[in-house]
Image 1 (cartoon, rainbow, N blue to C red):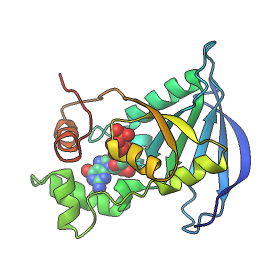
Image 2 (cartoon, helix red, strand yellow; image 1 turned 120 degrees about the vertical axis):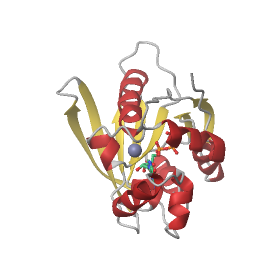
Image 3 (cartoon, rainbow, N blue to C red; image 1 turned 180 degrees about the vertical axis):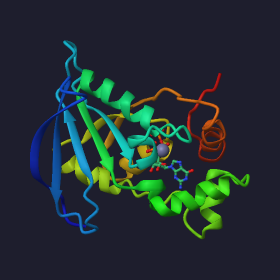
Image 4 (tube, rainbow, N blue to C red; image 1 turned 135 degrees about the vertical axis):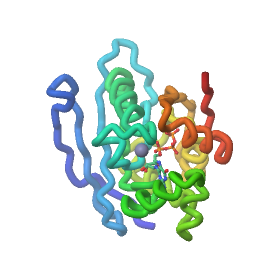
Length: 201
Ligand SMILES: Nc1nc2c(ncn2[C@@H]2O[C@H](COP(=O)(O)OP(=O)(O)OP(=O)(O)O)[C@@H](O)[C@H]2O)c(=O)[nH]1
Ligand SMILES: [Zn+2]
């Protein structure tokens, strides 16, 4: 697979101008998905020399509308807070619904409303329970000149896939568990079936 290269870097003030972020596009992704990297310089005096990195899979319902059915919106906010402080990157990956897309995720939600868990629902739709390939994230990191990361995640598969693609994950930094009455079953399924390291109260 061809190497990605950085196409354009544009500074965008986010959070009503409180945070400065650089949005970075790439050449060479044959899928045309338009994955984006967001770089933060880090405001802390004592910065770790290894960047803090979050692989964030797109979730329109959670990221934009603050859906209570998942934890994506809160995780994105947490990632912006921490990475803005410590310095690093959010890779905003266009992998809506763990790769099955938005319409299919809504179909999966309808099945979850009938009692199936988040993975069973995908399987009932004859779709992979998790269709994400994080190899693209490794290629984005290499294009940015990053070969070693501290990874902000509770999902062991993200670290494993980066390692397989020659990115050194020097530390796993857990994200907080953003549990509420609507997403508890969803988070419990991730811990039970995919070994996410989630500690509940
Ligand atoms: N198919 C499907 N996708 C979902 C569901 N709930 C959330 N998602 C998607 O799951 C993805 C969120 O996963 P992430 O937060 O990136 O990653 P994670 O695997 O939970 O791992 P962490 O790094 O620990 O957060 C987004 O693409 C969401 O759209 C669901 O019930 N079904
Ligand atoms: Zn979500």
